Length: 238
Image 1: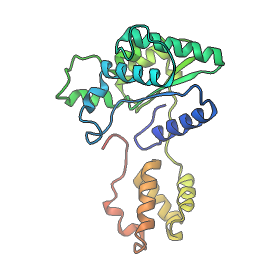
Image 2: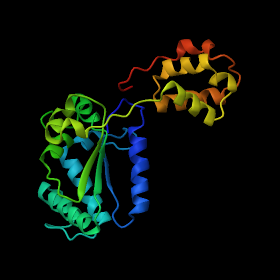
Image 3: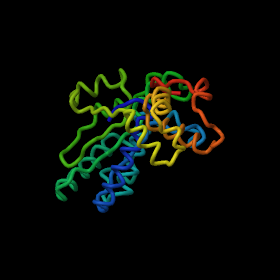
């Protein structure tokens, strides 16, 4: 799943995985996010490394599934992870379902490595693991990412047609969303919606933030009066 920041990739994946867990409680999906904030994890740079994702996936699979380890409990090795993924695939085949392993935030990998101070520039990353791991029947990998050169090898392996892009709201969808959050009627009129669409590029996250801001600040009567400090959003981080 690819798209601009704020278009709803993580929201979509989270919603879908929650639905999957509710429908198949005995075979929970496995989730890994390639980047979290410094305040959440002092070792956030390590999350992009191959070794760290191996550790996390091994722990997640052994916690979620009663699979006897090949080596020893929570052995953080590539062979152990491959064994566990193969075992999850067997469970999926026996249950006649495909169990997802989701890796979100792939676009953060190269950006974090470029400015990293705690890991080597030559250290293998999450992207290397994805290119090396074998994916058995009964398991699928799902990635959440922005477009970028980091996808070149993944497209070579999986095929361009396996990458689905999601987009922001259309102008009408922005209007419908603003009406649903019960914003002032003046802000759902044609001219205001056009301005909001222009400033947010239709990205749901930004439409949501701006809509809730306008709803909270009821003294604002004309969005054009504050438009000068709302920078147009063209995509990219920040």
